[in-house]
Image 1 (cartoon, one colour):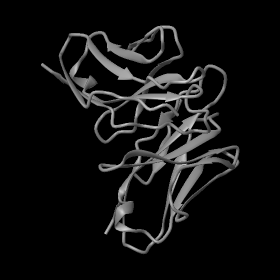
Image 2 (tube, helix red, strand yellow):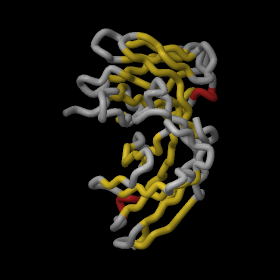
Image 3 (cartoon, rainbow over the protein chains, first blue to last red):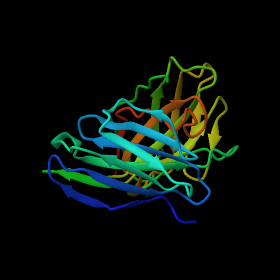
Length: 114
Length: 114
């Protein structure tokens, strides 16, 4: 079974630009969560999608958004990039079926804003 | 979600058992204890979880005290590849069905040395 796939793995953007990151969950998993990891703040929850609906959101500005498609693939978008958005962005998928609810993380997308 | 307290770092000799403690004194009755680890620059990896009984899988054992206010993750025979940051998380349902949100603390940096 293929794991969680995130693309691209590395990205360099300029301040003020926008960026879209992609996440393909494990086949059959309908829940996709996104996290931001920085040295100063650690791992922080961004949002979670289930069956194309955002069910939970962390404490991030509106510049951070996401969506989920009918095949459970998810994208997150960051608009008007700031230097502080440089981070490792991680996606996790869960099946949420009875007894199989642990989260599986991808390798992440490392975003550098210059 | 309940907060957890972990020592910032621990050392362990290769081949010996690594015992990683976690304090979660404010845990609620419906909250599980989860352990994840993150090897440098990779996404977090699920290790084990439990509610009140001790649990064991191929990776580790989880010992939860009777009052559920603390737990210990045991890696029975640590190897150099177990060097990682270990996160103890409490969450209302297995795998983050509090709509995908896992609240990561700073974790314990475990260093396994030869």
